[in-house]
Length: 138
Image (cartoon, rainbow, N blue to C red; front, top):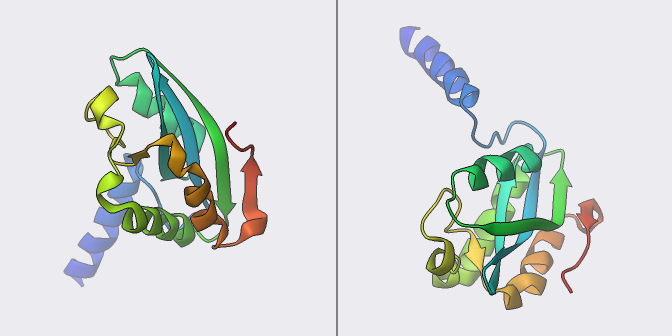
């Protein structure tokens, strides 16, 4: 009984500090990042993408501009994590492209060259195409 109680308390404490919660509705988002004369994609998952993005870039020392190009919402919070894992699995070692320009930061391994945008969208849309909002990159 003590072990079950500790596990329950630990799970609740882990959610207090932030982090993605699969038990709640969630988003998979794709951003376009500009640093100097370079641009790349940043993808990720969040229960609150606007808050997540502000938190990530507050810690960066680089001058950059970031905008959400597309985001996908699911009531089942497990699907965004699945999509993120599918994207990472598809692109493999190409992920982390943005580290060359922005250095390592929370979320830097979820970066790709801009040319990957359409395929990332395709992967997300395979998991409920009617749940997207946003606009394509031009």
